[in-house]
Amino acid sequence: PRDTVDVLVVGSGGAGFSAAVSAFDNGAKVMLIEKEPVIGGNAKLAAGGMNAAETKQQAAKGIKDSIELMTKDTMKGGRNINDPALVKVLVEHSAGSIDWMTGMGADLSDVGRMGGASVNRTHRPTGGAGVGAHVVQVLYDNAVKRNIDMRMNTRGVEVLKDASGKVKGMLVKGKYTGYYWVKADAIVLATGGFGKNNDRVAKLDPKLKGFKATNQPGATGDGLDVAGEAGADMVDLKYIQAHPTLSIKGGVMVTEAVRGNGAILVNREGKRFVNEITTRDKAAAAILQQTGKTAFLIFDDSVRKSLKKIEKYIGLGVVPANASAVELGNSQGINGEELKKSIARYNEFVAAGKDADFERPQLPRALNEGQYYAIEVGPGVHHTMGGVKIDNKSEVLDTKGKVIPGLYGAGEVTGGVHGANRLGGNAISDIVTFGRLAGEEAAKYSKQ
Ligand code: ADP
Image (cartoon, rainbow, N blue to C red):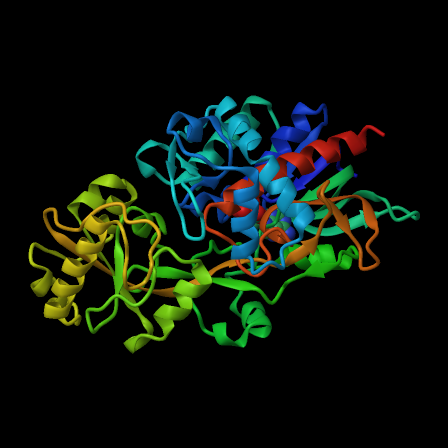
């Protein structure tokens, strides 16, 4: 071998960095490899937040949440096919993971709400700045502080095992160095999903053929092939999530928090058609039923002021604005008169505290301040729920249900945590919690 470590982490998203830092803190010599030239994976693009229940941040705001409620919401969102043992880990460790991140310097003090949640539990930086970039930055800084060996442009190609089937290392390929092998007692696969690989996506779910994706270019799923060759079992691969609001003009994902903070969705007829903060699968399906298979996010200056992220969309030039709802609508191919009526009707619901049309459970503010804004949106592939089968210690299981000794998986490369549909805010929670767990377990295992 060219290098010898205790724990090799494959992938530099939130799961990989969490695993690397936690393995180090549990006494392991760690290396982290990333096939792309830059760190962060899809995790860096995550805009929503980090879901957690029974946190100090919630308590400070008087929000009543519970392990039971977050479990129920997560299972319901996943259409109850989630692996309950993994959901238990996700939920019960969620508050601890918030503490772990804040202990390392993260700001997760703002608590908002995303689709499918019964209460506010999406923790994010003050002002609603992108949570993923923040979390990845904090983890990266902590990896640097620990002097962890991090190698970009380095792909994990094959898990190597000894005669008894235990992991003994990995064949890797450096862009500039070629193939070499790294001796390691344990490997954490944190290679993310395959949303950017439309061939793979369309084979599993033909409805999604030709869909754009919100993912980074490295989200091709080669980690799944590596795991498969090592004997890993796969679960729920056919469940692929389309994020409902990809900006049609900008090609960027518009965070669910825009709706969570008060935006409504209308069709070309100027009418609302769905509870805007329903789960992603339902919102995406509802948009595809509208004329032209797209819809418009509509909001005002009060929503704009509540969420920093909106300035980025405005900066991209994809957010037409007008003081008059009628003119805004007509200029965008929406029936302006109807749009005006829909906004007025929605504002009455806000005042009454009840959405009589679509039973939207949360009505944060009326839309009547300053200008109106519109963003044309439609579904894009966002998250792949399925993947490598793991147990509640993040150990990878083979097709007979047996642990592959020394192989761990965490984050989007795994399946089972989110069932058929992932709730917004549960990905960051997943990658921090399972990444941290996998790192800890891998470190312990390497010491045996
Ligand atoms: P998660 O959210 O689960 O942490 P991300 O998508 O954020 O997943 O990160 C996964 C990272 O793994 C991406 O940066 C991706 O480029 C990288 N990656 C994928 N396959 C490999 C591989 N075979 N070797 C090294 N890195 C990989």
